[in-house]
Length: 284
Image 1 (spheres, helix red, strand yellow):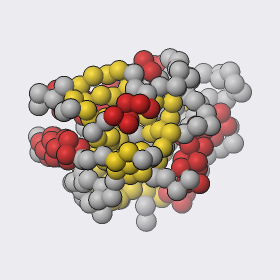
Image 2 (image 1 turned 120 degrees about the horizontal axis):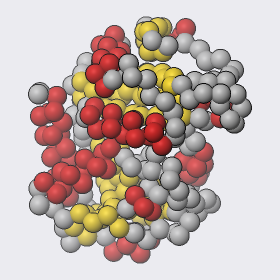
Image 3 (image 1 turned 90 degrees about the vertical axis):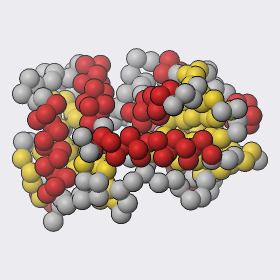
């Protein structure tokens, strides 16, 4: 039996339900947060908490004073233990505006739903086969104040993922309306050139990923230069390495973009540093 946490209690996932008035279902009015479970412990929770609070403020969802960081962390940890996620896994928290009304809600009360899954491995590991990617040509991502947040409006990423599947690709890169390359369907983008890391700036509209921030900080702590900037398709062709970062999967190296082929030396080094940081975090 698998459990979820909803409406203040742990319940059998088969007993969980939403009403027809649920604004997450009707309007995509909310956001979500995905947290890696590392050796049975939700990883980098402080970083996720910071982004959760920032996103709620941006969406004008009222945060209850009783739902502190410690309370939410205890709820997440309790679910992980009930579901016996003893090694690797994933937690997803879906937050939504719990109110009646149509486009205009009657209030801004918070509701949320926590679920978890189990992975066979606990440590972050490099993907044995590098990803093959291309650029998604059909739609662009607009740059606006909410672009950096993980809202429930994910139609662009769904369509891009379907395109990748149709073309036999592992993933595709998304561009903004200025044709800058900003991210993949579920990951942030990094390129390596002459030992220097480059990643799209948040001002270009990419999602402000927690793993993105961790990788930038790890690189700087280890004397690796990092530039947050504008990237275009030509930068991909001149790069030595390309990798994707994601809170759940860590780092994934890209082997090919069209006819261009890449190495994964820096990706492997950063992945080891990430595992070291994760181990130190859960042992505190």
